[in-house]
Length: 110
Image (tube, rainbow, N blue to C red; front, side):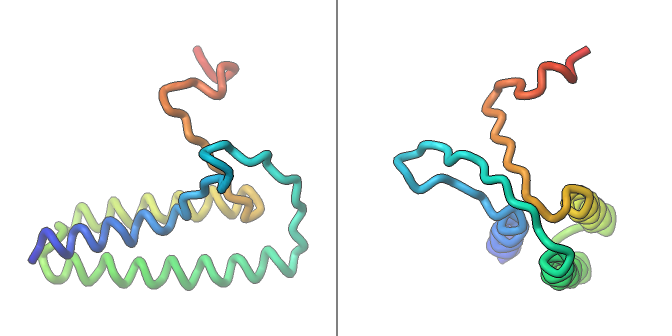
C-alpha cells in the first residue's frame, strides 16, 4: 500500500514539471519568444499558487500517514518553494533544460 501511495505521489510531483516534448518525431521545437502581460503573469501566479497549495496539502497528508518523515516532507516543500520562486523570477516562463550529460552552460564552468 505504501509503495502504491509513494508511486502516486511521485507521479504527482513530476506533473509539477509539465514535461515538455516536441510533437515532431522527437525533435525539439524552437523556443518561442513570448512576453507575458502583467495580467497573464498574475493569472499564472494564481494557478501556480493553487497547485502549490494542493501539493503542500498532499505532502502534509503523506507525512501525517507516515509515508514520509517530517524531514522528507520539509525537504520536498522546500524544493517546491525554490522551484516556484525560480519560476516567478523568470516571469512565469518555464525553462526546459534537458542536459543529457552535456554542459549547456560552459561559461559557468570553473
